[in-house]
Length: 373
Image (cartoon, rainbow, N blue to C red):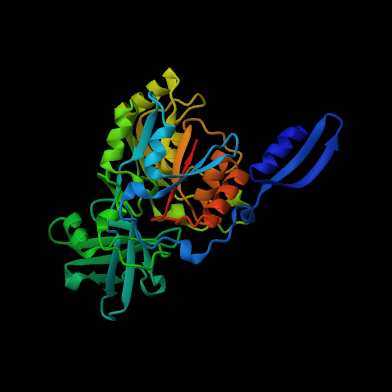
């Protein structure tokens, strides 16, 4: 049984009622999560094509999730919403130049490869375009033969397993031949690779940047620490599966791809100490959030460890480990928008997006930020 108040809460947080049967003691409902409930119209000119000159001068929309109050600030003002004793959790993953342009051996056909997951020293799972040209046994040549890859298998998701051959260190060759795998909505060439890295990036492995962290500068992080707020690192290597379109009309049928995470004993201890003392846990980005929620228990305490997570967070989810969220503006109908809607309420988030569009905020990877408190 579910009360009318609970039903209204669920509807406001993204559920649609497909059937309702009244009873003397309450209401029974069958709930459906509809993809179209997470859609919005974005003018194309608001999609940021390049990073702002000064990272912490990006705009910041502050959303108070309990009241729905919205403020418009600059990102450097985020420090005003933290308190001594809080902890800020950042994802220190580093984007690798995972996009390679090669040619099919014998035919010379152009082949694009995006590396996703390293299975062993020389074997990677990758996206390959056009896939129809590269069946198992095909060989792709990169950089005049400095690097070659044989297609060993086809993955369940339609990707390819590539076995690489080269002389020297793979990382050195990748750094020389690879390009940053920018999202397809960014059409402008990136002049400085480091602008698609956070200033604290150090653990290589991501196919995309944890973009909420792009707004931080060393000075801003030092200011946060000086306020008595501890900054701790976790790792989640972002795969392109995070941005895979949701095609199921009932979003609960969508399956997330797994991504590798790490949380050290030191990080877990700092977070748990904060929780025990009554401080708040602020997650920078949906990646840090998914990591903490993967390892958090019902009381908000986290455990150290490493592994793979395919956690899918959408409205109706009860957050355990995260109290404050810093995030960018996300694509319509995306799993990231669903996560943010779960955290702050779908109606609150869509209203915030409406105001951001009216105020001409910049959207997506190189765009402006939201702080949800």
